[in-house]
Image (cartoon, rainbow, N blue to C red; front, side, top):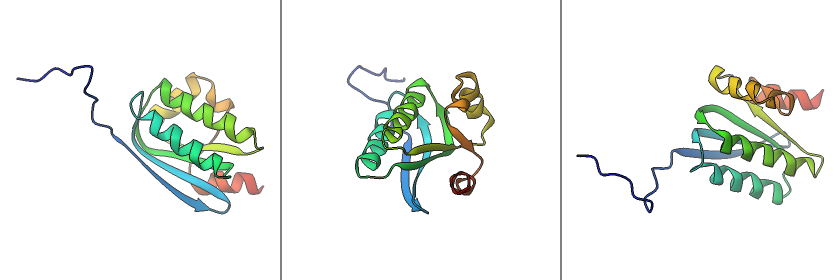
Length: 126
């Protein structure tokens, strides 16, 4: 018999973040789900990067299975932070389900959305 969740229990957090450097950019590779429970971890990772002087960020969501409005808000917040330093925040995404979310919300006009990390880096070199 399943045990109902109480308000004190949190569901398992299904999110992994890896950060690396490439040609002056910080790449944040995200895997799992970006939702109300996991988005604070992404927000903190982006804030830490930006506060430590990294103002050109690429968020790779190729391994993200789910993205909700909270996750979108974190990405928009990160973009606002880097723009305060004349920086950039681009997204790597080819997954149709996620691209549709960016299109429906109009965020394809706000973010640079690229097929690969290399494409995102090259766009800034041009």
